[in-house]
Image 1: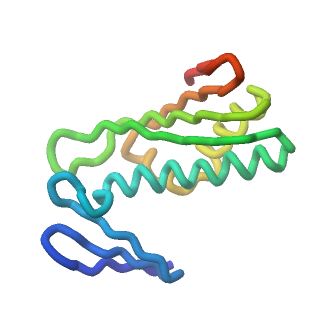
Image 2: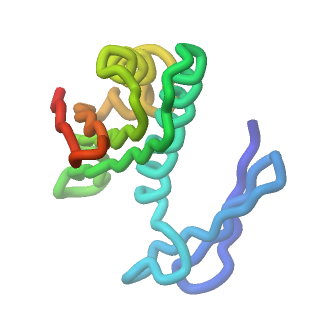
Image 3: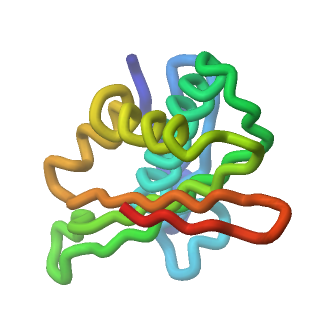
Length: 142
């Protein structure tokens, strides 16, 4: 795998991947033209675990209709400002069984998600699952 960044102006950089995709990173105040590199890391974590959970639930033939994964992170006060704690919230829609959802999230966190496995070397990663249903949201925190 190969990636590069090119400085474009101010505190903006264009990240380019070997597969031909590009992302603008903005480390300036307000991150007007793109995410900061650390925001991008959190987005990558959410994407990585989402891929796992959707794949696992599809293989189990669970009736998944939606999935949103959000991350809230704390960083160390002094440089390097690494993540020290991350809370992932999985909002699962459809008549997915709670057992299947919990198993999928657990497998992603502990076995399949490469981004999670890298980040857990520096940060404590916790998760909670919210189940969307016709009467609102059931919350199951882990």
